[in-house]
Image (cartoon, rainbow, N blue to C red):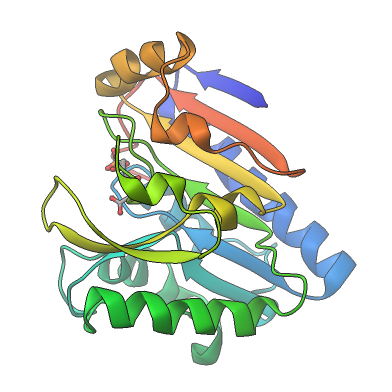
Length: 232
Ligand code: 6PG
């Protein structure tokens, strides 16, 4: 595991941008395709805005997924999809068929089943995402895997419907088996409000984010003590 802490949020987002670009270039060079799973939340939005101007990533050979989604229609601002579209996807030429939106408009059970079929078809026999971007909440949750939730013990399915103690409560989330099988997982943690949960993590508390231990992929933690970038 590699952990880099930045005092300056601009450096944090610059490094995060370079990480995504380098993984994308390597994936497309080796396999002709780049599979990335985006995180929801506020922290990654300045990164997505920077990636929207990237001249390094071959968007035509990129497939975009999400690590989780609220069970809301795609236009709902509570969902991760709407924010990602305006920050990134409306500005880069990813073919629409390669934007794999989690169908939050379906029931959580149907949405999770449909997305599992779609992601398994997309990833093919290899079944590996090249990069999963994740955040961490102040309670240590990541994606929509919350502390003490039974979804944390799922060993087979790649997507689950979950009812959680956050608004909105119904979500669809990637499970640990899928996330752990990624070639690279990168956590983006920014702001003074995450200092305490990072301390708990460092003290070995069994938090959902701590359970993200890639099978044989890379794990990177990028931490910024400053709040997320304002003028990206
Ligand atoms: C989501 C994310 C969630 C997020 C954390 C941190 O859909 O909200 O999957 O796990 O990464 O809650 O969010 P912030 O980056 O806004 O602190």
